[in-house]
Length: 81
Ligand SMILES: [Zn+2]
Image 1 (cartoon, rainbow, N blue to C red):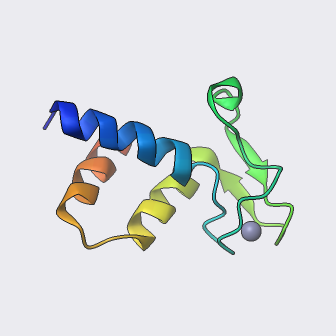
Image 2: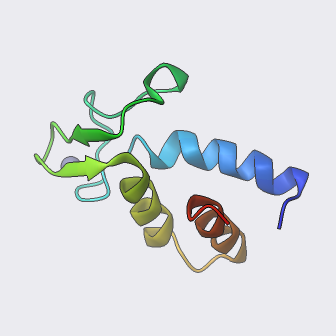
């Protein structure tokens, strides 16, 4: 499953999917930002008040974008392979 392009995709996807609220689609100030916030597991959307587990929120965003073969690889990565 591992390949250079997939690794690059996961990195970009991680940066986006962890910051966007899977409930309302906002990218609120309260969401985890970049590598400094990688340790944050739970956050609350300041836009709609939804409580998020970082990884589950990311998975929902990926699923919402779904249908593209490359995204299936991303889901497998999130599940720890
Ligand atoms: Zn929200």
